[in-house]
Image (cartoon, rainbow, N blue to C red; front, side, top):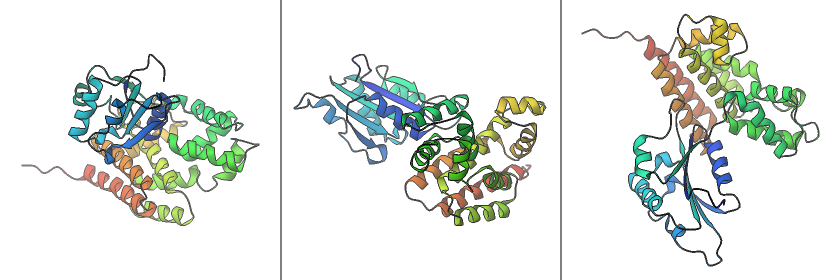
Length: 323
């Protein structure tokens, strides 16, 4: 741990994967004890205050700090006020897409001694990030291969990192190229995920369910499908935030889309939802991601996601009762 590193660090962002990677990096060579907030017990910081018999630095990582109970947050605050020498406490705090940081009440409770840092990979920086993850594994990479990977699997860093790991095992000499991406992830590409998303966000619930069941029966990974739905949802949120009369070329540019026809289709789909409805769906997808990673069945979790997409459209279409 660097001598000038803050003894208590709060990392926040949308991606649990990126948060954990950043947290582990913040400890350097220190081996930290990791505790999920759902498993928090009183006295979690006690070991930090106990000097090591061998004199090594001590670390504690609390993941999912947004779920800490009130007494857990209070314990973190007490420790932050008087941190132990030679120890470091790191908390990760996952937020929604529109959040500008952890709640003010949380920051106020932790106090001014805590360093607060955002963890994010911006969309424009994602190709470089994927390239670095590949190079760290000694895997060759070409720009068009990275583009093909993102277009095929979406923008979820955890899914992309897992895909790089798969390519390192299946194509160690070729690396990340358009050809290896097509060979490794055939059937997980744009066409079928696009069909699923177009049906779900276009109001065809039956068609979306048929596409979903067919893809799962073909052996396609639930997390990859969820990442594809999440990527489309983020695009719709960006498009929905623009003024209705924005020219299609400008919509495409500002939303990061490649074609004007995409902008037209996405604008039509976005108008089926209220802005708060899209925000609710983002929360649903975060919950679904957590459920899958905790052992939930892909068919049940994803069917629930698709049903909620349909429910939000129905909510938007429902007439407002007049008094």
